[in-house]
Image (cartoon, rainbow, N blue to C red):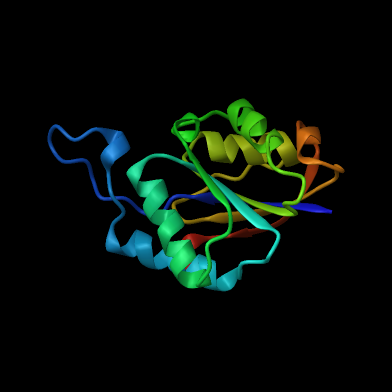
Length: 159
C-alpha cells in the first residue's frame, strides 16, 4: 500500500513592496504549525518528499525535518511552484519504487485540486493543512484520477 501526504505550506508573511511571491518567507505561525504537523506524523524509513522550490515551501520542509530529526530523501523542484494537479501527478509518478510514503509540499489551488482529482473529495486546504490519502495502486506511476481515498484531513491550525 502506498500513502500520500499532501501538505500546503505554512502561513507566509505578506509580500513586501517589490518582493516576488516566490520569495515570501514563512511567518512564525507558519513555522510552528508545520513543525507540529511533523510531530503529529513522524517520519518513517520509507518516506520521501517532493517540494516546490518557493522559499515558504522550503521553510515548511525545514520545519518538518526539524520535527523529525532526520532527513528522508527529498526533491526540491521549480516545477512544483504553483503546480496544477496534473503536474503534481506527473511529479508523483516519478517517485522511486522504494518509497512507500510520499509527502508533497505545495501551494493552492493545485494541492487542493490534487485531493479532488485523486479522491473525488473537495477539500479547500488552508495553510499547514495535511491531507492523508491511501492509494489503490501498486506503484507511483499508477497514480491518477480516482486512484486514492481520503484517510484524513488534519488542519494546520489544530496541529
